[in-house]
Image 1 (cartoon, rainbow, N blue to C red):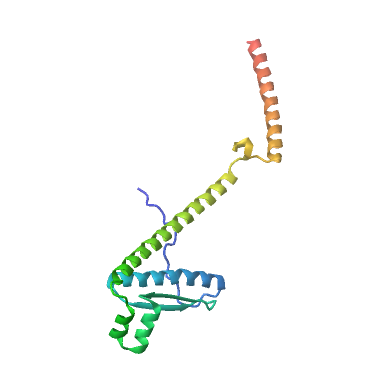
Image 2 (image 1 turned 90 degrees about the vertical axis):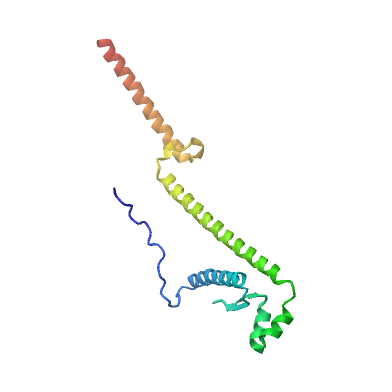
Length: 179
């Protein structure tokens, strides 16, 4: 029994050095920012933690995530008066609702990630099919999908085939008469 050869390299460790290409750096930032915010949301939901994150993109755009809000977490941190400010700014009875919202957000983000993966897989399958389709013999395609040059070539090939069929039929008839 032969084992299948591993087709991909799998998940590789990325060296922690600055990404040189700006577009790659921006894409990596966006993906990692989303992952960071998702983890923060999960921490809030699972542990009831208050979290505040502020991140600036390579393009100098600010992005933030906070529970209950970035402002309340920052105020609490800056004032060092942990209990009184947090209780003042946290509306009573709202923690259950925000916890539910955080759980919904986490589920929606997971669904979005799965949908993106399915979309990428579908796009890859379409690409593979397109490559496979272009590599097949053009005459195997439906006539409606052929261009004018292919139709002319098919016509001349059919005419040539007709000549061969007529010739073989005549030969077979002559051989049949001799027997």
